[in-house]
Length: 498
Image 1 (cartoon, rainbow, N blue to C red):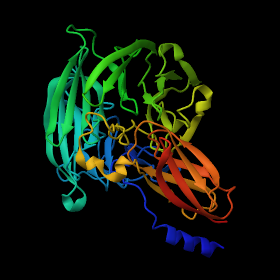
Image 2: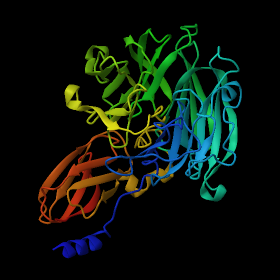
Image 3: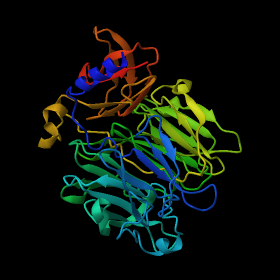
Image 4: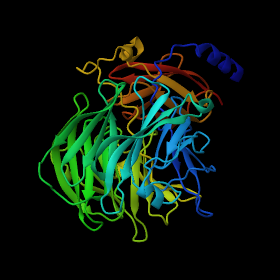
C-alpha cells in the first residue's frame, strides 16, 4: 500500500499551488548570545522546522541588546546586526560591515554590540529585491543626552559572492533627540513600502517616515502637544498590532515608576496617528515587554514578576486586565515577541536559562495556555530581535492599493503557497503557510478521496506554521484545503502512511 500512496503523491504534486509571498519567512531565524564563558555563546531559533529547533553556533559578531536580522524569502539567514557590526550568513563581519553608529558609545561599549533595546530594525528595500536597509539609533557623544540621530545603512546581497556587503553606512535620517529604543516599522497599505516611526525625546511628537523605492523620507512630524511633557524615558517599548491598525507604547521615567501605556490608532494608508486610550499598568522593574496576539485582539505585557493580558477591542482596555501568571520572587519576566508559529515567547531574568511560552495567544485568560519554562537552553539568551510583522500585506481595494505588480490573479484570489512536511507523514503534520496575509481567521481542512472532511483546524491571522497530529487518520491520500473569507485560498495533497 505504501508504494501506491507514494506513487499517487508524485502525480498529485503537479497540482497548482498559490502565489509565493516573498516576505513571509523573513523572521524565521532568530539570533542571540555572546561568548563570555561556558554558559554563553551563539544561539539560533529556527522556525523553518516545526517545532522550532535550537542550535548553538560559533559566531564572530555577538549580541547583548541591539538585535536586528533578515532572512531570505526561503527563510535562510542573510545577515544580522548588533548595532556596531553587520554579519553575513556565516556569522562573520561583512567586508565593510564595521563602524555602525561610530562615536562615543561605539568605542565605550564592548565587543558585544550596542546596548539599545529595539535600537535597530532591518527592512527589505522596496523595488530592489537584493537590497536591504538597516535603520538604527545612535547614542550621543556622552552619557547624559540619549539618542541623537536615526541612521540608515544599506546592504547589497549581490556582493561578496552572494554573502552581501554594506554599501552605504550611517546615512542620517533624523538628526534630533529621540526616545531610546522606541523604534518600529509597519507595512504600507500598498503592500510594498514601509512606515517607520520614532518618538521625539521629552515631547509627545512622532516622526513618521516612509521607505519607498525613492528612499527614506519624512512623511510627517505628528505633534500631539507643543510643550515639553516629560523627562527622559527608560525601559519603554513600542509595538504594532499584527494588523497594523494600533500602536502600543509604554514608558516610565525611572525603574520604579508607574508605567504609562498608550494605545494609538494608525492609518496604514495615510500614515496618520490618533490617540485612543492610555492608562497606568504598574511599576516598571527591568525591561518591559509587549506582544500582540495574531488576531490583534489581546495585548500581553510583562511587568516584573507579572504577565498581564488586555483586550484591545474593549471600550475600556484598562478594565480588562487579567493576570496570566505570577513568577516567584527569584525570577522576573523580560522582553517578549510573537513568533512565526503563532506563539508568544517570553524571556526571563538572566539567572533563568529558560523561556516561557503562550501557546494560544488568541484566547482569553487561562485558555491562552501559558507554559512556564517551555524552552530551556544550554546558554543564556540575550535581547530578542526587533522585527516588523512581515506577513502583513496590502489592504486590498483601499485607496492605497495602487501597486500593479501586487495585482496578479493569484494574489487577488488570496491564493497561498502551502507546504506539508514530512510528506508522506506518519504522525505529526507540519503545514507551512505562505501568502498574502491580512486580517481574518483561516481554517485548514483535510478531505479523504470520497470528499469527506476528516479534520479541521483553526489558524489565526498571520500564523504561518500549523503543527497537528494525524496519527488517528487511515493510510491514504488526502486533500488539504485552506479556507479564508469563506472561500478556498490554497490546496495541498497530504499522504498519510502507516
